[in-house]
Length: 383
Image 1 (cartoon, rainbow, N blue to C red):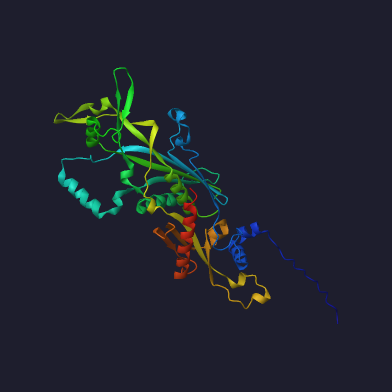
Image 2: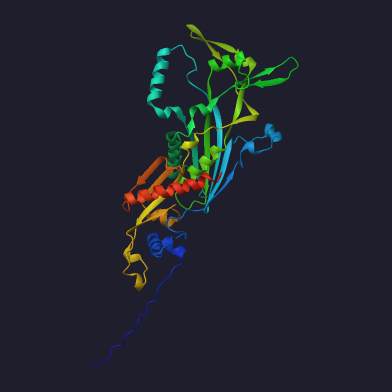
């Protein structure tokens, strides 16, 4: 018999650092961390990231009074929010538009129909902001689907939450007068209630502020809606609106326009100016202000768990609720999410449930609502 030479084959295990494993197989990395009772970001399952807030850093009204007349900044309110490694910078700007319908009109039938529709539609009593969300990724180009979706959702949530009443955006326009010596003085309707010119102006025209919000996100590590919402709320709470006025000559200035010889229409021309010094605080409906938080549910994979021999017989939960979704592994692997906007008393203004992964049970919803109250209570004390 001839002897057969056998060659020995040695198998060496390949190990990867946690950062590399999270890139190669994010689901396996997440399951391994969850089996150890921690998350890839080394936080507990129901632990939130710490939040640091810096208010009014960019606002023009953060400057001394003597510098306000020469300030070039048009930012009315601002906020810088740091959550974990993510920074969110929000700046509020504004404009003034003329309402399509005057305060007093002779068309009583149209006014009655408008009043009836406003009574039926509760949303018509409130206004919103027009946000633009930019997630910085080191490139330029058209806005991504995420940026457009988050911007639209922020607009809709502010409107349906009823945070900003339309009356808070009404412009109480003043009149600037010039005396015989050339000194200019501005009178406002809430300061001069008996002024006939101011009353006549308020009856003829109606203006309103329009608010815009630019939200820039740096070092994105997870979903950004809850961070953008909280930063927007903090910015709105310290927003101030500049007082507006027109010159007294503009109150009687008219221009005749003829339309093909048929008839002549009269149009008023005027310029609305903003007072560089005086401003008023934006009045929000404080009981309706809530803060956002997000949660995710994921099923545990028994094959990916790392258990010791003594723990094999212990009962393990089939799914886990994670608060404040973070890191690429969690965002990629968690498909069942819960997003809540509410206050510390449990009043809810928006709840969004998205399935697709683990089953969202009533117990998970109840636990998310309880954690949302605790999160809102903590954020409300940051001002």
